[in-house]
Length: 329
Length: 191
Figure (tube, rainbow over the protein chains, first blue to last red):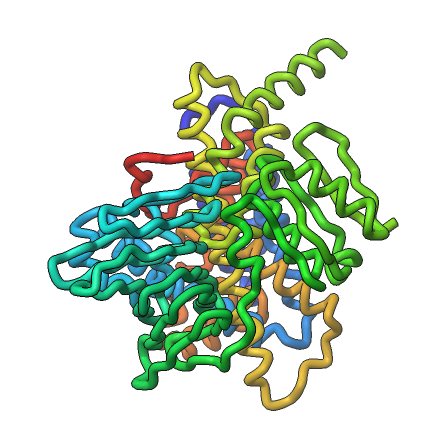
């Protein structure tokens, strides 16, 4: 480090200060050693500067030192730092899979928990913020990709396979009786039985909503499978398939640029609008549980917000053009 | 007055041209739209508080990507700390007497300490935190880690020096460089 500023202590001074600290904190320094430390401190402004760093760093520990749970805190720290390098390798592994032979590498990396984070970079199709993309595949299948979503395509002679990497897609399958149509998510496999359906992948699981035909669901780690008929939806994780519920029309409405709310918490509505809003969209905690009903345009977030403000007890703050915050009246 | 207007104009320009892109990039990295929106927002706030001069759009994006990448790593580390802290508390035989605020303060302090000690080998960081946070003697730490107490003294000095160097970098106004090996940048970016 070059000495560009006089105030900054040299490496040597910092090293000495750190060594003094390691000795003095034990309380085992002899009187002679303490005297030597005082002399060291008095000798140079640089030493005093370095020592002030030591004191500042030591003070950061005081909330821990005074906590009754300090041993617990330290073991939590140890647990977290021991886990960190392993996670990093998983991310890199995921990246290698998605950049290289993405389909062959897939089986390996789909099992890493963080694969979704690194995965979109190599995907075949994706939609960015504030856009819904419509893609026509060679077999006559149409796929609508929701904002901030992505999937891979792998068609072979024997099957048509899509991998939903992140987000949500709506699929209208083309007719091809000789090749089954399969969608894989992190949580399992779906087989379309001549159909129109949406697949949404989140942390909590995959949600499949079927509008026409039917879809067979195979959770990844469960031997069981189930069929979701038209008009129904089901959520599943790698281990379980939850019971059927009526399909939410909102799952299909986004492809028309509409957000349908039916008693939906405002927090969820705002989370959805954020996909379509380029700026900051904040929501105060008190307003999160307000119930929203009606349909709102996704392609005009400002208008959607004004509409919300006209039916809910909320106030919109727009201090800057790209900054909107929502609070209770 | 005019200077600040110029700054806010530049900033709006940067925001308008790159926020979209950054948000999409961060979302891909995190896989969570709400976290991504917060993080991308914070990145621009940092840019606003630490204005930089850029020659071209490529430089802006390289800078934003580096900053956002560091912030993603921070977020993951904070989350895993939080998770570990909750797990350890849940596994305690006796429920904690600390209030929610006190617990939050502990977590906050742990996060700060984790940021300071990130460059160190886990064993060194663990020794330092045990010694200082729990005010354990060198011998006690040595027994826990199965090393000599001389080694513990060395670890403590090494960790303190590492924190001091970070402190010095921050004092000199240099941006803190993320030392974590980061994933290579995506080849293409659609926005």
